[in-house]
Length: 159
Image (tube, rainbow, N blue to C red):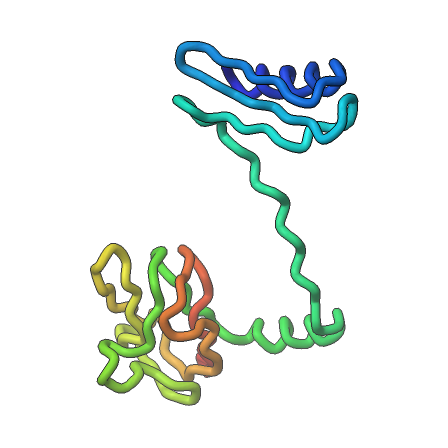
């Protein structure tokens, strides 16, 4: 039974004005419950042997706290900077180990090849080198937080 069959079964149960239906084959079982006969289906439980893929609920959009003018101003300010981005997925660390100092701070000068952070991926700690020379203007990621591929980590003023 695929997802289309399940959806059709849910519609059929809804129209049939019953409160509960159990459907079982040798390798699949599903129970569909409706709150009141004839109303929308509120509960579907696939699963004994096979589980049907479930759709995630749409996420709430974050509320913007700054005005569009502020965003435009910040974007124009950041456009003169070069971004150092994450080359991989992992956990971002500013220090080589907990008892050591951070690699770079805001205001520090970096040159091509200087280590700016470490990203841990699958228990391997990968040093991330700067691809540009300049001054660190902003650190965009908090220490010990997950990062995605191509996520901005630092802003560098090349002048």
